[in-house]
Length: 72
Image 1 (cartoon, rainbow, N blue to C red):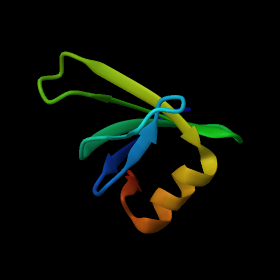
Image 2 (image 1 turned 30 degrees about the horizontal axis):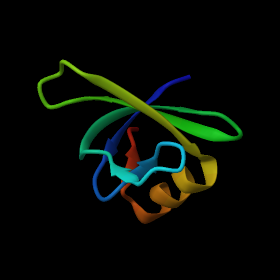
Image 3 (image 1 turned 90 degrees about the horizontal axis):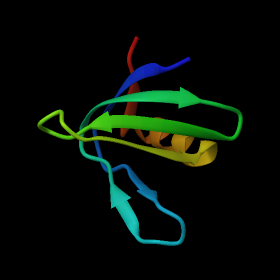
Image 4 (image 1 turned 60 degrees about the vertical axis):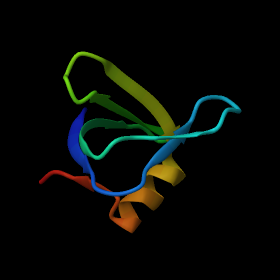
């Protein structure tokens, strides 16, 4: 089940073996499984939707740091 969240600080993900890519601050939708968290967001104009899956350990670290804050 998807949850609403806010990116409030530096959150990055990696595509394959590529460089770290920042996720812009603002609202995201999060779906969590035992292995990973999928984050989805739209660009500033709302025209391009992006998403990424990150290991659950990274997601939990961002929660602990407060750079991802779950709504509610």
